[in-house]
Image 1: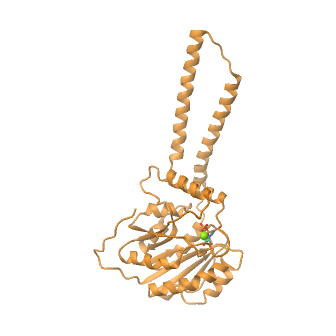
Image 2 (image 1 turned 30 degrees about the horizontal axis):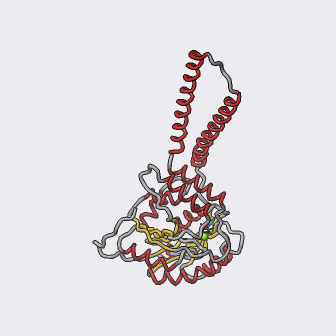
Image 3 (image 1 turned 180 degrees about the horizontal axis):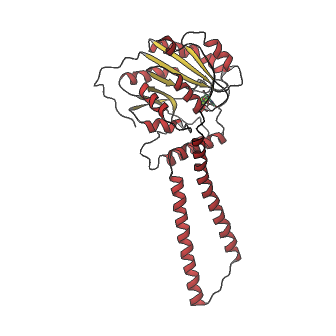
Length: 326
Ligand code: UDP
Ligand code: MG
């Protein structure tokens, strides 16, 4: 994934830069982030914009955004309710107009200082520059082990790889943004979509900061849900595993049946073992239900896709960005 970008061509000029920031109940964090971000963007490109996306916040986030959009270069897309971070990012990407687009969290975990490095790599020819978390000690054991498992499972046998530790903190060239926006699916598992579209990518290691205010919105339950979304969206091996399991069990049952028949003819032993029957019955019913559940997960995804509902709905747009300037 990590291609060395040789500086054969002269460095590209960055004419305009957008920064997309999804926000869900982040009023206090925005106050801290926006002054820093604005100064940083102004130092990087002659034309820039901050695209704030309010993902149905219930605190003063929308109010803070309204105040900030009076400033030049700051605009806000207010969604009609909470659609989730992936949908909020899609809304931001759709609205962004820059030649390159940066996405970052609003909770101060993604240091704006890293944008210098992002833009430097873009100038040298990279189409995607993504930040990779360096130290994960701060995260809970559940999240660490779960993440390792997840990447092990999802990266098994695919043509493209999801780099572990990479998240949504990244810079993308306009052509990559267009490629992402052109993908029609409803299930926006962004980490997978980034990998799927490809292009020349450069990884930049970084240390995530502590969340400034509030707590993470991703509970254990939501993370598991998110993992299943990703797995089902980017691989069909669980379906194949079910077929494999079926074959193995059928073979074992056939073998055992043959053994019992032989036993009967050779030693005249008759059927016995109530316990064996009950235990194996429960085991196989359990396996069948799990298998059915795996298939149902995929059927559910198909149902979501065929409904073709929009990814998000916009309630209001505020402020002027690059698009209105031109
Ligand atoms: N977020 C969002 N919609 C949601 C949940 C989160 O837009 O439904 C935003 C949130 O405001 C933040 C970013 O996504 O800017 C990352 O969320 P969080 O910090 O809770 O996640 P973590 O850092 O724990 O992965
Ligand atoms: Mg966070």
